Length: 389
Image (cartoon, rainbow, N blue to C red):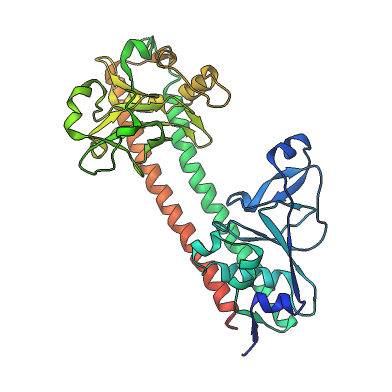
């Protein structure tokens, strides 16, 4: 079948659609006037929601859009809501032309094929020119398509929710076992502190003016390189390789545990990592701490101990500073725990390592399923707007 096709720009000029802008609403405003009404912005998470507010700007059926389209550019609020100044609204002025949900599906589909760099520049004057091929199916056909897509997406949503729950359950199983390990109080377990069992070294204040980007130089491990449970080397800074020997005390080794001392805990968890062979060679920079095992503690066990809920709770209880919460080497050393005999540590470390690997494999499987569902959604939209649904 052949449908008339128009650009968003043409539809606006024809008086079919109207673009509007939001207003400035800050986090301070949300805190000062709490309430149940959602506020939409350029948030890539939480379905575009910036937060909730005690006031609302709109109480009608609309589509919202955001200036930063790195995530989903368009959203469909279901209740009274507001939009910040980095977003806006799309209102259908001629309801004989469009069904709101149909137009939302069309724009969502077209958005998926727009280059990311273009979307980042999204602004009313740009947005109206980005979406060039909007099919004007007859209204009854739009309603039929919406019914089909709603039903298909509801089923896909249930499947996605199940996959998400399975992924969360796999991670929760590992976390539960991990935290349970460190609550043991067997008679041959001994009460001790990290300071008694590991060597704790804090990094050296290397001059940032002498950092290099030369791949042949040695990596510098800074707090920015540490994320919850892992290291990231994007944009890593380096130190001249011919000067590394004089900083032997700060050189890292396989199995060392490193902890960011500034903003040690973030929303994603505790910023710590265990050094692997592929991370080396690298040198410890100030405001990071290195924990190296003494003779009574196993490397793998130490990594899991630092990743446990007990150590995270301890860090949150002792960190200081409002703007940049931080901990000291002394506070790390003072962490107390019940330590099992070395042979038990080794066995626990092996068990946890196996369980963690199984958890990662499950998460990878579930992520693949989520990706397949996303492709299926896009395929359904494509078929719908080719008249094949």
